[in-house]
Length: 404
Image (cartoon, rainbow, N blue to C red; front, side):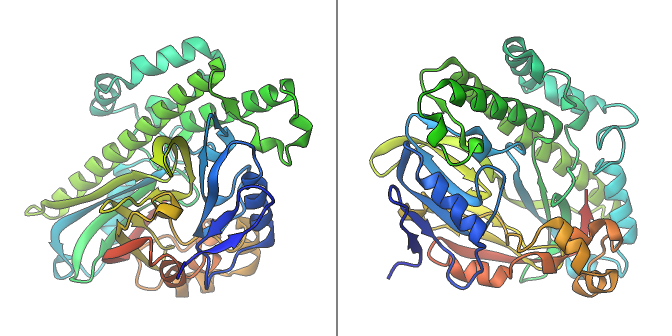
């Protein structure tokens, strides 16, 4: 029996893994608008964390033939997760993790700290060398040479730094009380610059194209294969995805260095995964080579590892993909919001947040109320709704959380 619901749109259907989880009507309409685009391949897949997004729905998987919608990828290009299991156990952690949190916050610039959340005291030599040796600097110069409006973003300044909003660094315990390090971040300012620029270019291209008036949402503007801007966007978005991956690697290296300072016998036992959940890739599905855009979704091919985080006070999961064809081999990227950030700030108090994050060494101030666990869907319901997409390998519960 299928675990998904099907929404008919008059063109391509929407297959949604949303049994037992709420879906706002605006998100459903947005999914239907996407599914009516002329180049959708087979159907649109919606994950259980699905909610309204700008342009495309967060928690959607969109397979397209001959076209890409930049707003479906969004501006946090390459945003994703990384996790590592360590040799430490819960018994080795001190009663208070406040000092460890402070040292991690000093080692990894985050939020509005430093130069727009970047390196305030100058870029460490190791970070600068990584940027050059990886080829990221040379590749970016080529892209900027074609599109000068992309220049000026804080690329090197942001390499190895944590974003704001729902980005985080966590120390977690698994079902055997082993200590894991997990983090969530993307391509930072340069990804935003690239995404915003090409979204604007796609809108302008749409206006030049016949039939633009019939598009239900101008944020669904696209580039077509064969156009110069299509190739330039693919080049730029793949660069941003590589930058995001490198960003997570640099942050993880610095966090592990802090752990070694606190626990001299510490070592890494297992890297679980370093995966994107806002990105586009060339893949083969239903007998066709297509562009797959995952906006708030993780690739979950047969045997592939992924990470599905909960909110600040909830469990997270290391999962193994089951390769479900109808989901385009995908799963959710988290719990998914149930309300806007402004609504969460209106609805919840500091006492509510403190109770929801009891036992977690983290910020408990007004600045993170919009990220409080009650603003998100129930992660257990989200996992139940996608039990045919992934198998749980490890269940993690955070004991320390650093927010941007």
